Length: 88
Image 1 (cartoon, rainbow, N blue to C red):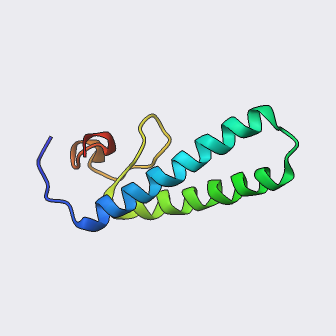
Image 2 (image 1 turned 135 degrees about the vertical axis):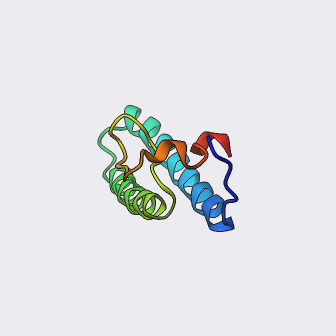
């Protein structure tokens, strides 16, 4: 894998995505035991939509976040172009 110098916005956007992911995990765990809480379901859907938009913006700028068909790629195969999100 080649070594790239990444802009600060890469780290900022990745950190913000990780924060939203944390919220979604916590809301999921809560909903597992409180499946009829409409307020939390609305919050979950809000953050799920927010994450989708944030991930789309990140991927347009920096490449795919997830393998195995969860993210699109352009040519050439982008996984070898930048560090994987868990490597930074």
